[in-house]
Amino acid sequence: MVSRCQLDDIHASDGHCSIEGTLDIIGDRWTLLILRDIFRGVRRFSQLHDDLGIAKNLLADRLSRLVDADVVRKVGYNERPPRYEYRLTPRGLELSPALVALMSWGDRWCTKGEPPTVLVHDRCETPLEQLLLCPTCSEHVEPTHIRSRTSGLPA
Amino acid sequence: MVSRCQLDDIHASDGHCSIEGTLDIIGDRWTLLILRDIFRGVRRFSQLHDDLGIAKNLLADRLSRLVDADVVRKVGYNERPPRYEYRLTPRGLELSPALVALMSWGDRWCTKGEPPTVLVHDRCETPLEQLLLCPTCSEHVEPTHIRSRTSGLPA
Image 1 (cartoon, rainbow over the protein chains, first blue to last red):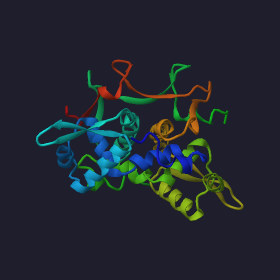
Image 2 (image 1 turned 90 degrees about the vertical axis):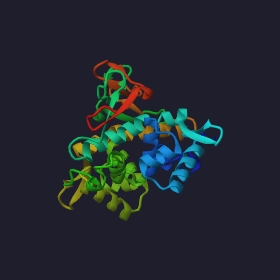
Image 3 (image 1 turned 90 degrees about the horizontal axis):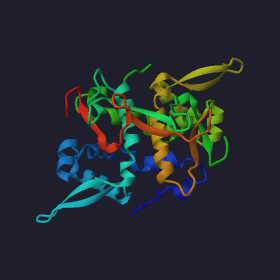
Image 4 (image 1 turned 120 degrees about the vertical axis):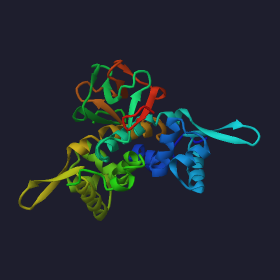
């Protein structure tokens, strides 16, 4: 199990790790499409293969990397013959906001007309809105009011 | 000015465009670090060069691609000698949630101890929380309650 990104030692001191480390794990196109499918409940090797049209060796490679990075885990669902599915770990589940944000931007800027998918609330089917909340002011914060603070010290 | 991603024609029909198209524009490590800096107010070529330690030819290439993709625009701030800075377009500004999400995940899973930066509300300095809101139910929706609906039809 890997609990830290491999770039720690190289980048911990220059402050670039947060984005670089994330991309090092999920910055590959197939990896993101696989994760999107797993979030949607497409979890078995054969289902992923059929849904994505990805070559089996590439799919096996990407899944193996995701398991090594502790983003998904391999769980048996059949004993004879042995069959497995891939489920999100807590670390993987926390990628949800990143996938939602990347999809939303692509939906808005990279599609003709209707976006290919819409993310909705399971209970009422209302399209969801991603936002930043300030817990102190109890208000939605626009991008122009975000400030970046370095390592606990005021910027 | 490019208002659609270049992968439209290839991917519009297979539903993969939203994430692939996004990564095609911002999936490069330097590009994301440059965007992060521009969001923080580091907007001039020389400032970006100093802050990131990136080679000048790479920086010029990435900035030129971002201008071509209508994510940033080049604005003159000095006439003699001519000097420019790079500002986010409306399309670029909407990348804020994606950058926030990628940074937050990296902060949580790819750093030792303190994350390198914390995003706070400019007014009160409280660390911000990214969440998904259902406008109908007025509640925060957890990843397990997100459903994906295809092109206006129930999934």
